[in-house]
Image (cartoon, rainbow, N blue to C red; front, side, top):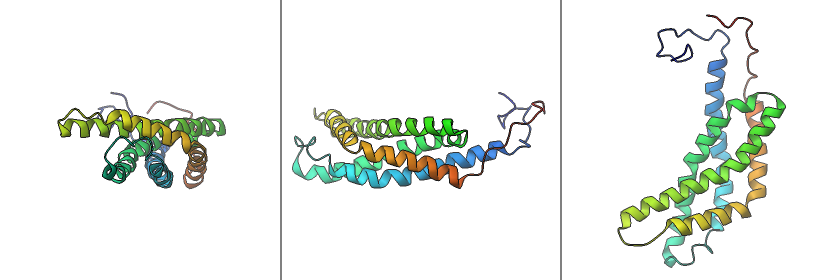
Length: 175
């Protein structure tokens, strides 16, 4: 345990306030990522009908809703993890934007496939839902890729404008 861990006996308050700024940026990044994910997910959920053609006809609507709901936590966690890094230099913001644009479809599709495995375990029969879920998630992600890039750029711009700049590094590193 280091001095940054509040459970450490050597813990000291952060005089610069950068720890609190990072926490707030992570929260703001999670909320913004989730808010920008929802419209793109609604559009992509309308595109998953063809890869799910082998499933019963009444399943496509609930599975589309499941796709949206299961991808939301993955996107929010990605936004929270990348949020503090987006507040650095412009190069950092660019790299974070690329990471979000690449990672958002992966996180949403992975969450969707995991939900397919969970449903498979509940059904008990030999239906394999994870494979059609993976095909549906990847094909929908490819079709909305330009919107994901625009969403990632918007996320970085909103986060940088709504967050205060990080504190400059202090001269002394000893408490």
